Structures are given as structure tokens and as C-alpha cells.
Image (cartoon, rainbow, N blue to C red):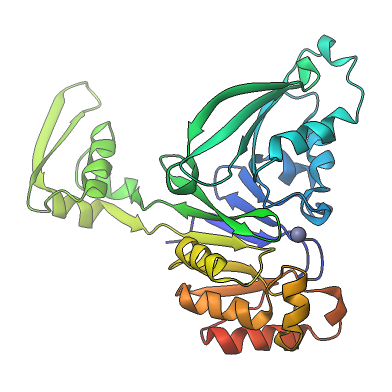
Amino acid sequence: MRPLIHSRLVNPPFGDPGLYIEFMFERRGMLFDLGDLRPLSDRRLLRVSHVFVSHTHMDHFAGFDRMIRILLGRDRTLYLFGPQGFIERVWHRLASYTWNLVRNFKTDLVLVVGEYAGGSGMTVARLSCRDGFAVESLAPRPAPHGILVDRPDYRVRAAVVDHGIPCLAFTIEQKQHVNVWRNRVEEMGFRVGPWLRELKQAILRGDDVGSAFRVHWRDADGTARDEVHPLGELRDRLTGIVPGQKITYVTDVRWSESNRDAIVELARNSDLLYIEAAFLDADADLAAAKNHLTAAQAGRLARAAAVRRMLPFHFSPRYGDREADLRQEAEAHFGGGTAVAK
Ligand SMILES: [Zn+2]
């Protein structure tokens, strides 16, 4: 079955870093980093409900204004997450504009901003347009193991990494999902009803396939009907399992043992790893001085995390004519089936 989340880099690999994630069939999107957003249409940006910012160097945050400009005047809540100091940075960006007219707005744009500095909790603030985006502190929220968002169908987790400053790497893990073939429900003589949700839950819980499952429904004339079947039979005849996808985004980190451990733990077994490969290994000293990875280091991290596909990006402009060298170096150290980022 087709994966339910699609991801793509916002810009070509020499442009500003950023990843756009779209949930198929839901018109819902997410953004990892807010650099140059010009390649994204207003329509796509309007779908974004959650934004995750690795750090506030300009190439990761300059698109914040465009995002706010598009949402202004709409009744919306936008969730933003970033590293230590993020709430203050967001407020400063907004405070450079004049907001004397917003009290008369019929709509309210609300930003809920989470700041994750490691550990098992995060600082949260609410900035509402009608209040001129004044910072209202909310109660801290739990973030066990760096989990920033936990929804029935997916979760997003962060790890604090060192870029000379605290920076966040992110992973989105879509949970396993059960699809029901409606036509087969009718073929078996049943009708749809709340029992389908119970069936999905029993399958996801891993209940014994031999256990008896009661299918109950009402016929067109309102007669209550029920039948008992083994769970395994219903699972095999009526449903398909869509495995969860894991997509990890790592950029702007120095090569160090603690970064290595944090990244490998976060990215382990990802289906896709987007990872910066800023420098060639011949310039490893320069990479270290600028707190970035080399392509070889990116490849080694992808290999250690046993990811299925690696997509290197955030190439330093100094290699403008050597993109192939960066990709080859990363691939050589990954040793897997490196995909070519489009
Ligand atoms: Zn940076």
C-alpha cells in the first residue's frame, strides 16, 4: 500500500535547508525549518499545522515572516517547536512589526510555541494576534524521550544536538495503520459499523488471531445481526496493514561522539534520512570549525543508524560544481542504496 506521508526538500541541495511533509488524503502539511520558502505555494503553506525549527540561523528561520503573513487574518492555530531560546526569538521577530489594529480583527491567529532544551519536558507559550502577540506562558508540557507531538497516527520526536549552539534534529514516525476493504465487507454479507473500529483496534493490539470476534450490524430494515468469526480470518479477508514510515531530518551539527550517539538513536531504522553533507572530507577541518558535517560523516551516520535511504542536502556553495563528489562521498561511506534527492 502507498505510504500516507510524503516528504520533499523545499529547496535544491545548495539552497536553504527545509523539508515539507504532506499527509496524503488529508490536506495537512508540516515544515521542518523555515528558510527560503519561495518554492512552496501559498496553498501548500496554508496546509501547514506544525513547524519544527532546528535553530534560528537565518537560513533556517527567515521564512517565518512569509508563514505568518499568509496566516494573518485567519482563524488558525499554528504549532511551532524549536530549541532553547526559541520563544524569545519568535517574539522578537513579531515585535518588530506594529500591531495596533489587530484588536479589531474578527479572527485570531494563535501561535503555540514549544521550546525543547532536552530532558522530558518543554517550555510552552501562547502568542495570540489579538493580544499583539504578547507572550503568555503556559504550563510546561511533557516531552518524554523528546516526543514533541504524539497523535493517534504519528509522532514527532526531537534530539538536542550541538552546532556550536543547541540545535534540534527531528524524526516523524507514522504509526502502523489498518485499512479496511469496504467492498469485501459487503461481499462477506456484513454492513459497516462501529465494529470495524473495534476490529482495527484488536489487530493493532495484537490480539490472538484465533480469538473470537463478534461482527455486529443492522440490516437495511433495522434488524440487528451478528456473527462470530476468528479474528485472523477477518484480518486476512477484510484488512490490509500499512506499515508506519519513519522520516528523519538532521542538519547543522558538528561531528562529535555525543552528536553521533544522539543522531544514531534518533534516526535508527528510518525509511528516509535527510542529512546535511555540507563539506567534503578533505575539508574536515573547515567543517569542524563551522560546526557542520562532511559528506563522509553523514554517510557513516546513515550507516550506523541502519537507515533504508539517505538523502544528503545542505551542500556548501563552495562546491557549486562538485555536487556529484559530495553525493559519491556520502554514498561510499553509507554503503547502501543512496537515493538521489530531486
Ligand atoms: Zn546553522
